[in-house]
Amino acid sequence: MPPFEDEPDSGAPATRRDFLKVGAAAGLTAALGGCLNSQRGIQRAQAMPAGPLLAAPPMEKVRIGFVGVGGMGMVHIENLVHIPGAEIRAVCDIVDDKVRAAQDRVVKAGFAKPTGYSRGPLDFERMCQEEELDLVYNATPWEWHVPICIAAMKAGKHAATEVPAAYTVDDCWRLVETAEKLGKHCVMMENCNYGRAELLMLNLVRKGMFGELLHGEGGYLHDLREIKFSKEGEGLWRRAHSIRRDGNLYPTHGLGPIAQCMDINRGDRFDYVVSMSSNSRGLRLYAAEQFPAGDPRRAEVFKLGDVNASLIRTVNGRTIYLAHNCDNPRPYSRINMLQGTRGILSGYPDRVHIEGRSPPHRWETLDKYYEEFEHPLWRSEEVKSSTSGHGGMDYLEDLRLIECLRKGRPTDMNVYDAAAISVITPLTEQSVANRSRPQDVPDFTRGRWKTNEKLGIAGLA
Ligand SMILES: NC(=O)c1ccc[n+]([C@@H]2O[C@H](COP(=O)([O-])OP(=O)(O)OC[C@H]3O[C@@H](n4cnc5c(N)ncnc54)[C@H](O)[C@@H]3O)[C@@H](O)[C@H]2O)c1
Image (tube, rainbow, N blue to C red):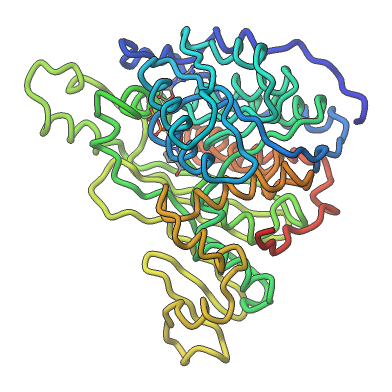
């Protein structure tokens, strides 16, 4: 590990400083961390030494402490009880009943009862201190991802987090610096990187079917109005971000698979981003139409523009269009488009056109391409038949994480990916706030993107 310049630790105090107090009675008492700090982030990039962080020693079993067992947490629990070598030893949530439900699920699967932690929003710190764990995995609201990952790594555990890993430039750096200093993995679990069409797309890229890659498009276009206004689950915390922030708040599902195909941090990297937001209408309109007079939700005012459109340029000259809209009536889409000099693949609906193979000017469906070019990870019946969480891709991401940890291999996604993809959020916020001015993307790898190996086409062990 290279020398590490120890900075004043903004870690533990930050957990108490400016995060949402999320809880049964919390409502929307948002005090969201500031995002306007990229200048410092860029300077820091120059000041920090480089450090390798690819693999950790192998382990027979992966002993897991799981923090946040709500909607997505229980999807991961369901996956993990089926994955060989994974053992859930501790479960933490601020809601006692959720801890009990997760414990019951683990016991039902034939394991010993995991220790429960539910003494408040910082009880994950006690779990990290008391438990012998290899991995602390969290699926909590966004404001808790960084404090939990940092607490885990400081206690000598690897960290895995739901998306986005962080939403300030400084927090992205903190994850990278802490992981390097302590030699721990800090993986952002981007399940869409393991989608069937997305992995087919990667395989086609690796086989050169698209020629030279030029452009990608991705997005998170998901009508979340009902969920955001719900009195449970994400309704307790996600809407608060729409009140205080304007930009692309959720870039990872659309951008992750494009970044994977474009070898971001492994031959290319994001250079700069520009971003623009539309007016904010959808949430206020929804509240006015859905809730009776006097309901406090009708009085809420939202900063988040309904449609956010961003453009990223990479150092190698590729372009990416990234969209975000969760507040209007519309069917779901992540766009998932990749254009090269020889062809194009696009999602929603899935279609492909490869020069010389496809009829001129016509789309083809993916069926024939799956027959010929299915990614090895998707050839397994185990994955195809997994029904837990987004049709198999969530199972695959958990399976790969556990497999890589057990074998002591580099994880498919690492802390540099977590930082590079997550940092797009605060940079879009800065761009939107500044008449769409370009924002430089920090090089979290500090130059190693030039020599890092490309992600291979892995199969199941
Ligand atoms: N990858 C995906 O497809 C996908 C899908 C949904 C959600 N997510 C992500 O998963 C995360 C959780 O989302 P969700 O839908 O499960 O939300 P949720 O509200 O259903 O679950 C969050 C859980 O965290 C608990 N919690 C809150 N603060 C905590 C704390 N300090 N310590 C311990 N537990 C705490 C809550 O009680 C709740 O059980 C978010 O980051 C979200 O972006 C990802």
